[in-house]
Picture (cartoon, rainbow, N blue to C red):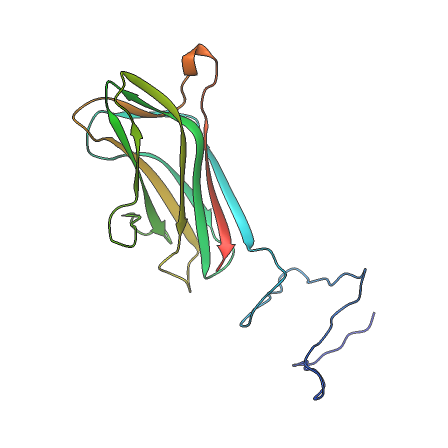
Length: 196
């Protein structure tokens, strides 16, 4: 094996492209090396890393003050990333015409949590419930988060909270034996890190 040691590789003055490798060959990047891109990368996947967490408990409240349900923490693999947050499955229960509000808070680099807001400044909140005696439905929630810290970000954490938002009454998020069918409703939380 031969080694070429240079500080810079550029195409000939008459050309604009450098080709590395050949069809059927492998370019190997050793452990500890970093590829730093200040230009435009094409032909690569935008997906960088995925973190998942299963919530298999029950959180209930009858008050209008939001209470913590669960938190998922993602250690990012790159700077200047964006994050798709998803909550899938599980169940939400609203009894006797009660409405459950679900909101998500975010913390960057283990800092304090703050509400995720839409562009108009309002808290991004989803509502579950109906004018019914008993409602038990699967949960689905998603948001595309752009961090405020793009240069020294090491981790992001997303905290989910619920509240009962129309008069007092019990609402729940978590496992539920739906109609005695044995479907317990575990909830999958997922953070997908994407290139900007």
